[in-house]
Image (cartoon, rainbow, N blue to C red):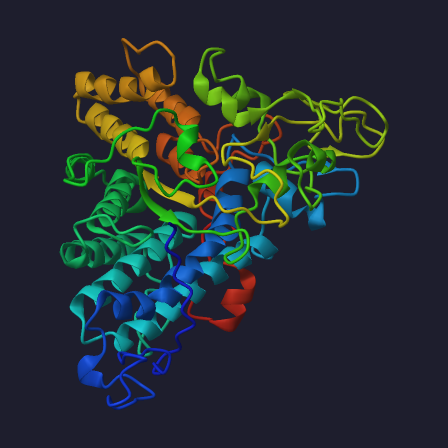
Length: 489
């Protein structure tokens, strides 16, 4: 059964807790837990940390969209009157965003709004070191997103912090210190959707993997050491039978997923990738009560990077679409609704015959059939074992251990029904990460690390490497003059 944390606990108020039996009328009744009894049980700790986890659900929009739509694996073309939105979506794929870009401002708000909430929660649980360190590790996850997206950002840990910009190297050092100090206090076992030692070590390994970008000098051995702790964990993660089985609607039983963010179609919204990618008429394909939005798709070059026998290719929805009855679907012009891989314009009008069918769509997160709601119940996968194995392969390769790297990559390939590699280049590693990790929020991060993010591709001609950092939103600088804008903006 899924374990959601929905506690609406506010700082300093604990009236929702009760340690008393409802049948023992001789016991004294309190409207709050006495301080010396607070945070003594797992249930109390989980409830106190609830707001820290609830805020993570914004990741599927505020983090996923900029990370994927600016890469080579996802595009949001303008389709007639849909998806223009002042050019925001085109700016992602064209790398033409500015400090006034609204969604980038939203990403900043998501990251630092949640950091602010964590900073308020930490003093509340100060009597419990494990709880404090769990919150510090979650905060480090937000700072990882901040250093990745914006580079030079303020380090704010309490009301006394001045909010001035720190260098990217300083932020890196802060995240490393927070994680290395906090991880030993986290639970060593599995705790669904909680930040455990394994999740913390995955985050630390991600930090080290990107050290060359973040601080200017690589840390491949540290990355390898951290990810090996996860791979060799006593919790015994194992590759699932298929990649896609980790993303089914009820994916909480996956033995491969290390850290997930829970969603529920009724109680915890935000998991709506199907709405963003499916055509309006696909509502009849899956028995959906809400009409999808016909937006997100992949680019032809990325789609064509999958071999025909690759089982992961099942994540894509291509060709003629059908109703649940088996009837062929048509578009608004009564033409066959058949998704095509290649299309010539990223800004299409109603006059363009392909504007509704352009692009292959994604079903990596299984589409919840006969769903009365616009949101689904798949849990968002942040870290999983396949990623850990690919990270180990990359770090091993950089350290000259090519045989070790091949062994890890081939575990992933064999599962997907494609031939093992016998030789290996950095391009091979990036390509394999793309096929395995597609639409999981890591592609921009990977491309920057491998030096391909600013290379020309279809619909992207802006080769300015300053776009490897997003701008500090102008609205945030206006509100805080201590912030310093990134170069190139």
